[in-house]
Image (cartoon, rainbow over all chains, first blue to last red; front, side, top):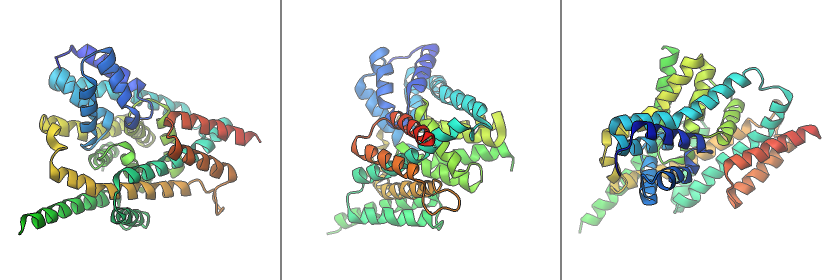
Length: 185
Length: 180
């Protein structure tokens, strides 16, 4: 929408960075509350669109969103300010915890809490795999490819980056092969 | 190679190849920090748990912690800048083009091809991390770990609660199990 002063951009994105519990997956309501409801800088539709775009380029969703919105509110300097502000709370909180916890990971209560947290985190990652599969894999072949990918990574035959490139390349090859078929009589 | 540059470059690369949003950066992170010997699987799980409870991007949380663990304050800055930069630079370079990227048929086709790879990566990473729950010398995780995993997995699939609530419940369960 319109240009905004840099210090307002900074404060808004600092608030977003400090309010986005659970990372990018859960951040859409936080963006909406700050930028559409509190500031009225963007419509909810604009927020949703920028959120979708932030997920379709590589990188950190929340930082990508901050760059997109910052560009709109204050050009390149706005983007820099927004990205910095949105990452600062997470950076300092983790830094503080890392310093605080150094050498205390094995103390009784910390170890007890972590013994409960670790299996729950494994469940969250496993749940993310299943959820993504259910929403994005629509054919048995796609599930088979996913299982093949999992086996290749697990057996240490292929590291993640080549697997990702392989998937994207397979998608492109299928796409252009289909287009060629459709184009020929 | 200089430790700081290695941190910066590793997290830059992780970020550059993480696309599709959500937890998709976790397999790359886990692979790299294990491969470089920066964090054990247990500590990786611990930091991931903390990331779910604290605000901000999970990628920044992981990068900051790993960077600090490997090379102190300068390390935390190098890793965090590295993880934030690829998306930011790409969006600055693409500008208005980014708005239309999602509508390109070739882009959508590449994303469709990516999805099975992402699901497979997440599944393999979940299994790898689950192995970290098995105590040394045992064949299976202890009863508390299995019970908490089952309850959390059921909740994730059934209600998908906010991860922060799930983590707080799991921490409480861990403390309760340690008292009985």
